[in-house]
Every structure is written in C-alpha cells, then in structure tokens.
Length: 392
Image (cartoon, rainbow, N blue to C red; front, top):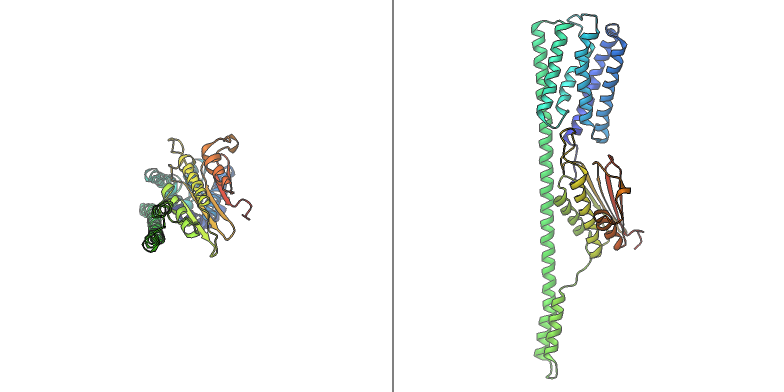
C-alpha cells in the first residue's frame, strides 16, 4: 500500500507558500518602520520566522516530519512578537500603515491548525493570535471599529477554512488508504482462490495417478500381483500428498502484503518484481516472510511509544513505516524502516530472540543476510537479502 502526500506534508507546502508570500509586504513594512522598534527585537523575530519557513520547506520537499514543529515556531513567534511590539515601540502607527508584525498574523492563524493533533489546543492558539492582534490595534495601531470588525471576520474565516481544508485532506487520505487496503485484500483472496484451485487440481491428478492406476492394475493384472502391497504403496503415495514446488514471485509478494496488512496496516508498501523473477524454495520464502513479520511486530511494539502527557509521541501503530520488496532474477531484497525512537544496537545481545534469532538467525539459516541498523532517536531499518552473495 503506497501512500501519497499526507495531510501534514500538504499543510507544510501551504504554510511555506503562505509565509513566503506574506514575507514580501512584511519586509517592505519593516524597512519603512526600521526606526520604530529596536534591533534586538527585530533580529530574533526575523530569525525565528526564517527558522519556521525552513522547517516547513524541509517537511514540504523531503517529507520530514517537522510540519508541527514549523507551525509551532511560526505561530509562537508571531504571537510573541504581536504581544511584545507594544512594549518596545515608541511609535503610534497610522491607520493606513499597519505594523510589520501584523502582516504575519493571518499566516500564523492558518498555521495554528497544525500545532498539535488535537483541535482544541489549535483553536486556542488561533484565538490567542486574534486577541493579540486586537490588543496591538488598541495600543499602538488604532483603527476604526468597522475595519477592526472586518479584519477580525477575515481572521476567523482564515482559521475556519484552514481547519476545514486540513480535515478534508485527512479524511480523503484515510479513504484512499482504506480503499488501497480493500484492494490488496481482494487481490489476496483472489490469489488464495487460485492457489486453492491449483492445489485441488494437483490432488485430482494424484488421485488419478495413484488410485485409478492401482484399480486398473488390480483389474487387469495376472493373479500373481500382490494386491495388498499395491494398496499399501498407493496409500503411502496419498499420504505424501502432491509435491510442493517453489513459491513464485506473485505469491510471495501477496504474502508480504498480507503480513503488512496484518501487523502494521498503515505502513507504506512498495513491491516490485522483474518479469523473470526467480521462484523461491519454500523454506526461503518462509524465512524471509517471518523476518518481515517480526520486524513489523517490533515496530508496532517499540518504535512509537504512547504519549506520556508531556511529549507528543504518536500512539503505537501510528508512525511512518516503509516496507520495500525488490524481487529480481537473481536476488530478493526486503527492507522495513521506521522513523521511531530507535535503540542502541550494541546493547542488544546475540541471544535476543526478536533480532538475533527470529530475523538474523532465521534468514542466515537459508543462506541469506539480515542486518539491523538503529540509533536512539533516528529510527530503525531492517534489511534482508537472499541469497547473501547474490549467486546461489
């Protein structure tokens, strides 16, 4: 299941574009009003505004999860600057020349809907920005009642529209993910039905080859044929069942997708196979699949801990995870990566069941290679390759 642009990344794009557009009139106003506020007020405010833009741009371009941080920096900076301007300026601004800080208020109100994952704190931040703007008007920038009411209505509209747009994007993304999961489930059911039909055909062939051939031999053979021995041989052949062949790339890819849907449904799955991808021996397919399953279980259990009330960590199963499968003619490569809290690999002993035995040991036993890379705070990546030298 491949995820597209999520709500946070689209929010980062909109925030970046909005702040860059607003920066033009704000910068022009700052140049004109450079003597109205001291430099020690202007420099840190401008630096924090630039930091917010850089964080939003990073989230927009590279998909880095810094959108909420960028929104906090931008909204917090504008709120502090709006409240602090009346304390440091010695100028009363005319109605037609708003203070340069005021130009950032609409973008900060729009960014407030991205500050946290909950709507109540976001609406509190947006309301605080509107109240701070009203305070700015009453102290150093007196305007008519009609203009103040119009501006307030505009700011309320910005807050409501931003919340509505972000909610619509999030709902659309959820619907797409559910449809992708349903499509994958239908594919797996169709594949299972196909395999069941193939297995049934194998049994039909076995029954034909063993039972009917035995009955025909008994019916046509001379008296010296040992019918009991022939029956015992036939029963032994039926007990062995149809021969189990190698696992083709379509069935293996379906099994990997099923493991993702079972263990971590929100993971992003990217599976590709060459037209001449090699079939896998049953033990190899089982080892690779179990390694992926164990890696996803570790992510669900450890990568994204629940919030302690002081931080903003995601709930279990609610963080970005990517599963990649490349099935070529000579090699199979699998990767499970997350951006969770990570761990110190040196502290995990050689007898660890989840890593050393279930992943590295299981894959190594069938001639493959599994590596686990992780650092505290930098996520974890599990890479699996078979065969280990690519030439088995």
